[in-house]
Image 1 (cartoon, one colour):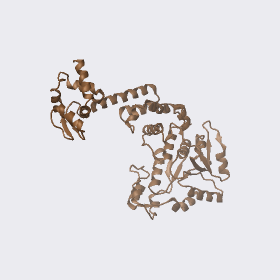
Image 2: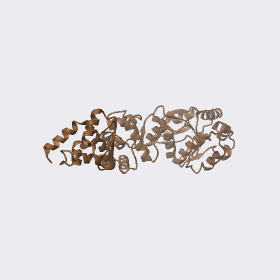
Image 3: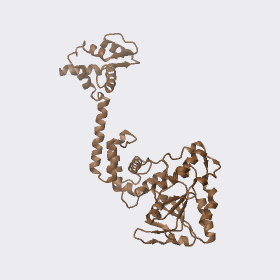
Image 4: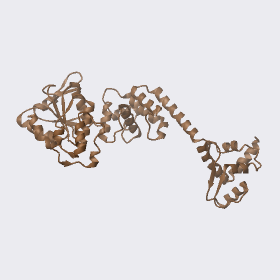
Length: 418
């Protein structure tokens, strides 16, 4: 190729912007087709652009026009540049514009795989490796493609997963150790969102939306987000540290008929939790604080101790920590919730996770006393996959479309406890 002629051609196109517009339009076609071809549409051409384009194509141009690549090639062959290969010239003129979408996807895929391979070499812990392999194999997808190329962000999350052990650790402390920023894993931060997604994938669940559910997910990995305001209310229980030492204030509260609003930071100190009267005594768990207080009023009046727990609605990390401690002691748990879709969902989660749980006053016979209508919108919240112990109740609820709240069964509960 004549270098002087090549330079002259480049100067000619640069001095006629409409020809560059035309070439750029063909570049978009190239990305879709993977080769040169198609038709370029040019609109709102100025008078000068019309003259320049008309001179090149050797025909009249008015306002807007459509030019095929074939016509463009034919016009090029009639210029003094005909000895220059047109396609090579275009590629040299705009080298970054002529990558097909297929080739671009291939390049992006290779770049992503290279980054993930580098991360896998650097992070060999079970949790980090499982997450990174899932990203590499396409089992798990990030919400935005650009995140795959953010090596620092992915590395921070993998480091956080590496640092997770069987020892409880607060989220800001973990974040600071992993990234140098105690707020890096906050829920509103990119690394925090990715950490939650990784944990949810590894545990086989979906990424939770509600804050208390996110906190509970972190708890599954011994990561504590909120250990003061996250609490359960307990009565009639004793607790022991992992070395067997008793945590005395649990027993003392039962002696004085005083319930404990016990925060997560204290619950996780208890390796084992059991009824004050021994593991042969069942532990009664209710959904709301009003029922708990009413039952405790009755027990206090007659001077009797019965293990009681209130989870205050949705399950929190403190709830799971209590259940874990009871599970390690082998205590029998009787759970009572509202007979509505939300109550069913809570019971389902507990039954699915623990073998030592039975339902308490959540029978089909008791549900038949329900008189309050259940709106269709709430009915849809019933779980599609139902635990065997809840199947008949869910079937009945789907038919009757009623709800029965715990307050309606309070007298039966009181009678049983006394």
